[in-house]
Length: 177
Image 1 (cartoon, helix red, strand yellow):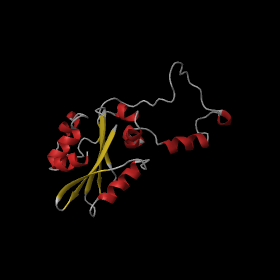
Image 2: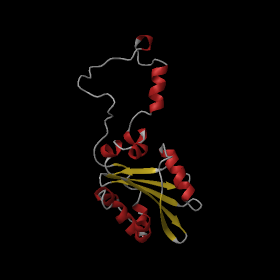
Image 3: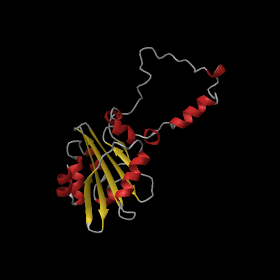
Image 4: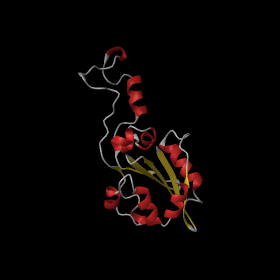
């Protein structure tokens, strides 16, 4: 089971609200959802957790690119919501649309557009290699009072509670949980 919450900075402090991610298909969609919850161009944190397996934080500051941290990339990759957070850039991969363009214009050197064969006996080609453990911007909460080393030690069971406690909105988060 998933829980997703928006923590938005306002003139009166931080406000928490739960959110549905059913219509979110990309990190861009998620950032747009966060911006819609912001007063002016204030900071919004999108917090996602899955049953103690992993958690993710997306920080959106106005029109800046979203900053992402995922506690366990391999676990998140097995989840629909985790896949949204794990962009090609974050994973250090070539974007999928560039890979598709390479195939379209036959830049791999094969004849007639035939894919190059490699020996992958025993490997499931549909499984993407994603590093286990934390991945992303460990400094995304540093100006809010949570050091990068602390972000790395947060566990999926208590991460959102600790973040909300530091921001002073624990009661609000628990009310929407």
